Structures are given as structure tokens and as C-alpha cells.
Length: 95
Image (cartoon, rainbow, N blue to C red):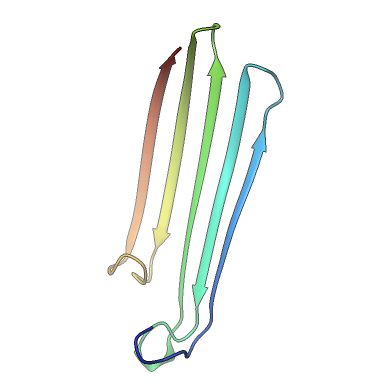
């Protein structure tokens, strides 16, 4: 913060990865942030995000993955205005 050290910012990034077989893996990533005195008047701000991905190896050469993401900055602290963002990604792999 410019010209001040007031307010605490806490941030957590947690990842859980599971690979139950040689062909399948998945992960969940959760982020959470909070800052005290984020805005004039001492108001705080919170933001969070979650993503989940799955990957499957169909053959020795082909694999596919899907990833879903959600981001929530309802106070607009990080992005500058209140936002709820979603993302979806499909990936094909050939080796």
C-alpha cells in the first residue's frame, strides 16, 4: 500500500491432487484472501477462487483434460470492480 502499512492481508492457496490410477488424475485448487482496512473508512475485502481439473490418458499417445474455474471478487478489491468470473477449458494431447 502506498504510504502506509496499515491493515493485514491474509492469503491461502490450497491444492489437493489425486491420481487413483495411471490413466486418471484430478486436482482441486482453492484460494482465499482477506484484507483488513482495504478501503477508505476501514472496510475490509474478501476474494476467493476455486478450480478443478480432470485428465485421462486414453491411449499411449492420446489424452484429454477438462478444467473448470470460478473467481469471486465481490468487493472489487483485486480487479477494481465487483466480479464473478467463470472459465472452462478443454485440452487434447497427442504425444
